[in-house]
Length: 102
Image (cartoon, rainbow, N blue to C red; front, top):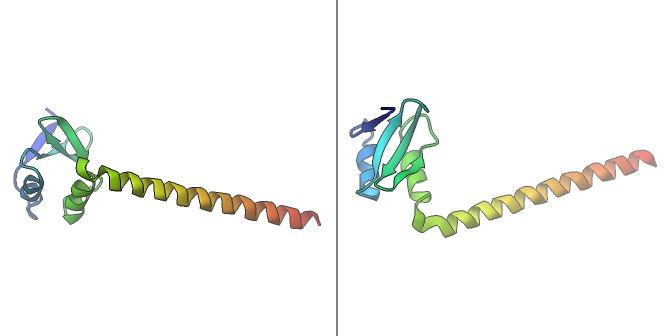
């Protein structure tokens, strides 16, 4: 099996994850070389960091189902910001090109 259950670690991340949800279990996926949190529903979240630390706990809390509305708003706001920045760059390039033609 590619999954190794992590029951204890130096920073008590596995224990803290179980405090968030008693159904959560922390695994290391040998094939993918990453940490994952599973429940009886299956894979809940992939840990986006190469090691376990407090960022792991923050990420799990942030991505929980009950926080989806806030997370979706953050994603939408970030996408809008990126689009504004891209439009601004296009306008600036067009102005430079126009000025060069004069």
